Image (cartoon, rainbow, N blue to C red):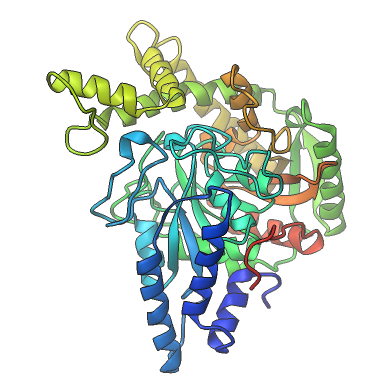
Length: 485
């Protein structure tokens, strides 16, 4: 298959043909990042990045072959551990934390010669849907700086769409890759649970968390996914049975593909989004896919299941941050107990505290059986129902978000309003299947709209193939300003 719109392949060709050096390319990105007003980055990795670029140039000069990802400038969400490079999770409590080890996904990309530009801004501890809860200030949407970029991987989405990074690795617990990808108009892919190692990902909710790529095209996402998806002995949840080489399957015919649309997910969605989704359905039918609707009333449980279990797991995972060994410490404290209380009270933001309190509540002995245990059973029931759906359909289609990017302070006095921004995305995390958001149009305010596709677990290649075939017919992603390659 010939590359279509892949930015990665374009960069690779430019480097190999010596039309631009890797060092020049990296400097070009840093120059643009430094004048950007999006607040997309928390920490830059300039010295190491430029040294990495020089090594790539030496390799090219000596006429050695380079990997397709080698020399490509990219970014990492600031929830991914990077040895000797600050990793903050967007939180005051980790504002000066420098890890002593690398996450597996970064180790893989580093070995491939990718050039890490820096760490992107995010909602604090990945808790949010707007990238407003970061200790380092909110991220702006490159399409309209009065709008949010989505969250929690808002910095990653913004820098990809603004041309500040060729691709980025984000994390997705309930839609944190797909929702900002939809708001910023790029492609965001959450792989199947178990495809990508989470070793080095600072956890929020361990049974939901997944790492995945964000880029301008499905081709780019596929290339990155093929590199980072592998079994990792450091992460017991990774699978030994991953279908790799999704890039080689991107141009397969989809006339045999059956696509199902859950009727319940097309309700309470903005009309412009529904219109764009209907146009997308027409395109997929034109490509030969068989599209039909189905009903799954049980999907209404997705949101309560998610927020009960996610908060429970988050409160447990965040219990480790006591500021004794690392992290923010208050100037004055009387004893160890006082240190822990003050560091957590002053170090965590309001949204993190809210979810810790909710998690502790549902895990309390008085309410555990009424909330946590029921939610676990309902989660398995929902997965069982979707297993039946995927026997009838290869792919499930639905909107990525109920609205396009909203203005800042949209849900300042009503957190539930913010939580509903994830209403279309949480199900994929609950049932551990792959899901992707692809740009499919724009609303009257010229804000991007996202189309979401899901498939059965470990059918990531099939999902990417359908997404690619759709993208070839309706390419909507674009760089807003940014670096022209």
